[in-house]
Length: 279
Image 1 (cartoon, rainbow, N blue to C red):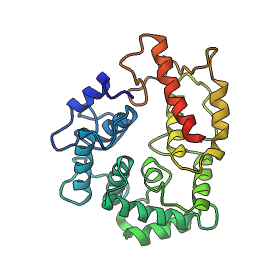
Image 2: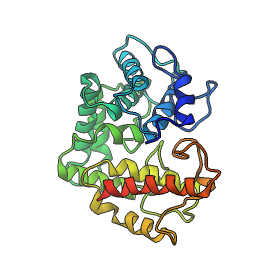
Image 3: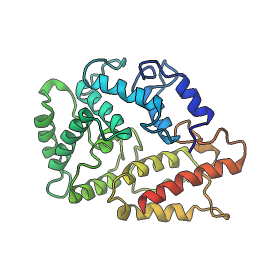
């Protein structure tokens, strides 16, 4: 893929010896450090890095140490919700994006899958059931802060592979139709297609679709996306999301976009890979 690009080499050169990149959270906000750990991980994942690569092995080892309490992420504790529950979720989610062989992360995934399964046991989302299961399973105290909405990047990532088919189908339908989308990924309704295909918004929209498409049963419910993508093919049978879609996260894949053909190749590669997942 794009493991030899200057983008990848720049990120790897900034990695600390213990496996982190400065602060951990988040993907999109600025930080005092050049890059956050999870933005580095997301960018490297997009560029084709896997658990077989040393930089990812180091990062997963670091995250596992943080998950088990040997180390702590350097971020300031947030007061909005229970920080320990949130950090265990985000660490486990990122570990599982690279490996399914980490017992600590898998145990957390099973807990979240149990919570979500309870919330959808009647075929549709029930917030009261979610709140009860959340507190029962995670042991959250009343003063622990706001409950974490499951419709966000970390929990959507972590429960994949642990749901029964009917629950998975109900979760996919809920995520597609949720008015405010998937937090930390795309914060508008997935059902509503972006107006401008050549935009950062459309690129982030694809990020939300890519996350949902990781579910094996998502294909049937994402056919409206397939039709939209096909309608945006250009005259030579490729896709071009335009220069404005360059955001330093999803794009570019290649070293630079000075040539339209290179940008077109990157966009076509990304969309073709997505369509393969959906089908």
